[in-house]
Amino acid sequence: MTPRSPVPLHLADLPLEERHQLLTDLGEPSYRAKQVSAHYFARLCDEPAAMTDLPATRRSDIGAALLPNLLHQVREVGCDAGRTHKTLWRLHDGVLVESVLMAYPDRVTVCVSSQAGCAMACPFCATGQAGLQRNLSTAEIVDQVVASARHARDGVLGGESRRLSNVVFMGMGEPLANYPRTVAAVRRITDPPPLGLGVSQRSVTVSTVGLVPRIRQLAREGLAVTLAVSLHAPDDGLRDELVPVNQRWKVAEVLDAAWGYAEQTGRRVSIEYAMIRAVNDQPWRADLLASLLRGHLAHVNLIPLNPTPGSRWDASEPAVMEEFVRRLRSGGISVTVRDTRGQEIAGACGQLAASG
Ligand code: SF4
Image (cartoon, rainbow, N blue to C red; front, side, top):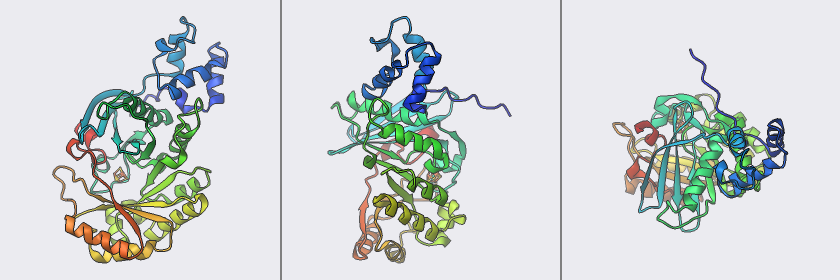
């Protein structure tokens, strides 16, 4: 098998001290690291030619060393009256990933991919069907956020300039299966400029299907990000099928790790639950879910499944969903039904890349 060519190194892969070193190795004064970082993170600029505080003769060398072009835009699609903007990117080796920018009255959120493909094999998910291609580098994750912040600033969301405020790791891939790069990306996204982009840690959400050792490790990182656990079923019998990694770490172990995370960080854990017609939407499952979560720092996000074309999985009926919500609430659980942004542009996880 031909080995993959490595992802080009980018300044967003490195903490500031290592960027200094890279510039020193290039024969440049180390303070240039701060200058280039400020262009990238504070001004969202990745065009060396526009960096007029760098010597004109050195801009292209510095750009080649610190700002290689990692994401090539293949396609962008808008929908929801301009409030949703989805971008399909081709990476240096040809693999495709996507990110989705969503405008709300009080915030602008980008959903980023952490892997090309995914090894978790959830049967209702388009990405899961194709398997894992590779982990994204730290900079490939961060650059999705920077490019999206630039898009928002430049008015792709209905013509108005908006400031990116939230980042969710809920695109393609299992973020905690790409652990070191995901955590480094979170640091880059949340460190203040010029170290990073300066998004508040509390406005970042990292999702997982339940990789218990990695949840416990994340709790020790000293980050105040929200943990989102994709539970999708409260009982092991069904979860073994819907989220195959449950065969390794059971519901009780996953929730125990989640409560450890909540205790360590003081952050409420988000429990993600895709509502799948006649599969996991029965009233007794709502009651069981409520009993598992009661007394813990948790919030349930119900997501009507966005079915992949030709799949046997479909979204729950609205009345069934209402009853599920009612039972959770009467069980004392805080719950929201997530809006299904991007449905008309194949918005379920992985579908744009799958059709790209
Ligand atoms: S639902 Fe998420 S974890 Fe499961 S296969 Fe799809 S991308 Fe992977």
